[in-house]
Amino acid sequence: MRIIHTADWHLCDRLHQVNRSGDLQARVENVAGLCEEHQADALLIAGDLFSEQASVEDMTQALTHLHEVFAPFFRRGGTIFAVTGNHDKEARIEMLRAGMRLAAPVAGRRQFVPGRMYLLNRPYFGTFQTTAGERVQVVLIPYPTPSRYAEPDDQFRSKEEENRVLQGRVAQEIENAGKHREFDQALPTILVAHLHVRGSEVHSLYKLTERDDVVFDSAFLPTAWAYVGLGHIHKPQCLGGMPHVRYPGSLDRLDFAERGDDKGVVLLDLGPTGLRSAPVWLPIAATPMHDVTITDVAELSTIPQRYPDRAEAIVRVRVTHTLDGPSRHEITQQLRRLFPRHAEIAWIKADSPASKTTASGFKPQADYRTTIREFLTRSLAGDPDKEAVLELAERFLTSEATK
Image 1 (cartoon, rainbow, N blue to C red):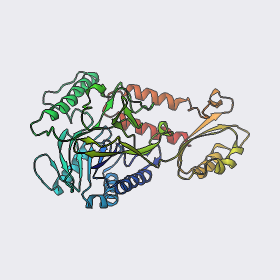
Image 2: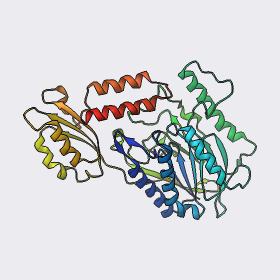
Image 3: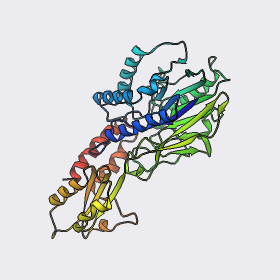
Image 4: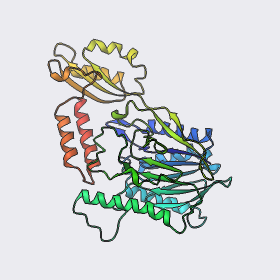
């Protein structure tokens, strides 16, 4: 049985004012192509299928596209197993699941029917059998939120207490699955989970900090199972030197912290007793991202040669402005033509300390925008509306930066 593991698709995402839907749809097509090239029987999506910014209309379009590109996969019995992540809005996911259940064939208790997609918003396990008769057991663990792991008497006095309780419940769900009377100890078992495991290498993103995330020790993972497919950390990696315990990374570069990352998926070859060989990394294309520093407007004429991929690349531009040159408006118009997918244009005074570049050639602007971002991130720690507020603030700050 061949299985492909991926995670963190963030469909319908935006990076400031740049709509990422086209980029992400192209990556979905890459994954569908790999499923056909390697004749995969199953695809694992370990959480964050959608961006938290996605509207119902956006999600409908994304799922329509997914259904179209995976049609050959589904026709030959291919099956998608997905769990929800921290960016998947639960009310919208439950609406999708209600529709999926209306069309779902029933094969029996804890039996996954081939040829369709499963999107789990609660812990669950079951057995999957391919059309060729190969069998595997799949344990699905969504990201820990109170509603997904709720108990009637829940009352948390702090975010830290809530995180500790959720951590314990996730660990208990995994343990309970292995002890369940319907759990088949003779079958190879795969865990699909959207979790932050301590020891993983993370990017320095304000969106993900240990202060307000539920963090797990690696010792709790069922490493004796055939494969542990994780999501939530966007950097591809094995945990603890174990090739069968993996984060595949995000589907595409989603933030400038990921601009140097390679992107891809993991291919497994599973036999009756477990993995037949070590999992294989399959690279996929990634959207180019650049930090562009302009210290003299004369450099604008060299942009086409320096950045031949500028039409599809997402860029941050940092411009040192002098009063004796073209106006900001004139420079901005040129930059917009040169970089149609610019995420930010930051202006630096010629005599400012910030005009001195770092070894990397780019130093983020240390102005009121940075102060606002840092203040909001600290103040909203643990707030359920944190992501939405930060996104609104980022849109406003970006619009100000490009004026």
